[in-house]
Length: 393
Image (cartoon, rainbow, N blue to C red):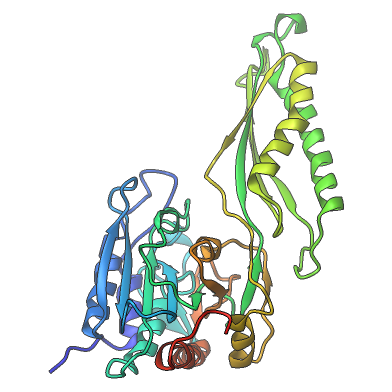
């Protein structure tokens, strides 16, 4: 008798109980291997062909690519998500974050919404098709390290995945389809001055005072960006630049020799990360020259491009039909642009709310589970059971 994955809630409980934290702090960072191993076993029980893809530059981190049906056939559907979570403050939770706990119709646990909950829902939808004669492949993609630098998505190439007609990135959108989101870049700005005794300002060049001037230039740069770029499809229709944290100096009686500021910049579709970095350099260089200091820019991670899917594409029309909602926009970034770069139409669409992501007592509303399963079943039927046709037909 063919094996079968455990029930959906048992799957989610096992995934929540399997920590897979991604963190830029090395002592908090974890492997996701145990999570992909569980997913691999369940998907193999359904007849998927499973391939694990270790990340060469991130030991212990692994992508999973599982395919059901004719992998070489054109078209099909890709269901994509990430296996890692952010860290959590366990002492602030009402229950153990690594034990799935139901309270008042809410499934609490680290990753229930962002986004381990998507995988049992995808598996439950796929379960219905285990005996079907699929005409195009159904692929499940589970990536590593989305929360820190999207290393798993960056590692993918066109040879790694079947080129699906539609890729669904199951990030929490309350089952509202999303066809565009802002990009993300985080930069460190370091001012190197000259330390000296505070009794005589001529003995040094204050990095703090130069940074004060640099911040003024950054705010002017932000205003210029927001004047030139606007997209009415977003709730916040302009690019944002946030001054996140600053560190400098070590004692009141020393001229500050070094100061570092970290910023977060969220570009709109059509804005490139390279052009933004060039703009930052241009606005800061005059400060360095006036103040006699060095100012260096350093990417805290490689950045994520903004994402926009053509609203008139076949995929977006079909998604609007199946969900009863026109695809919209969100301000947070996802792995969507990496999949789009591989030649697929992409929608961001999943259960749960982004308001619960990265929160104490994170939860997934049980009322969204059955509608999510039914929506994925309908998409699988359309993109994998029907005779495949070219994208956009």
